Length: 248
Image (cartoon, rainbow, N blue to C red; front, side, top):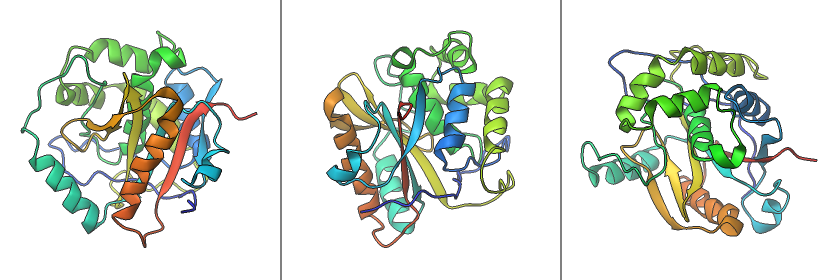
């Protein structure tokens, strides 16, 4: 299945008590790379479009891929799957110190930035993230907190909010209003240890998609992305970007 990069932006449908909302982030590798660097990632890393999930198209993706970010429509079929997964989890899953760094999403329209944050937070050593940058400071401050308390700290993280605004305003299309209702959503797929995780702040906890080796990560993550697409095969509002070295 070929993927056409989407110019649309995501939405978090669940309301928050404080109603903190951000301008949606465009699904655009240049915009997301700008955010990446604002967070403290060296400019040797960047996001790139993934034009399809078939093996021959994956061969064009800059390697080694460290994470995939998927944008998809919040359709009735997805919502059914989402609620089924959530009902199987406890109301407040305990913090797993050995698991991936995970943040709940309480900021409306922030899921594009949340996906980037989840990628960078779990790859900070591999990416050699600046220890004095906004992301490293946030992780250091919230390392011992549970995912919901991390979310509340993020609501007050003015440096990350500024990085988000700087990137959201740099898109190729006019940014929607912060209170816009757009039924699209971003999630991050990344390795932690030897397993592939789906990190979605709308969910209660990371979703473990099974074993994944470094040299099979892209293939494994593409398999998970295809499962999202199978739930809504006639919808064209899917796009995927990869995090890897700057293309030559």
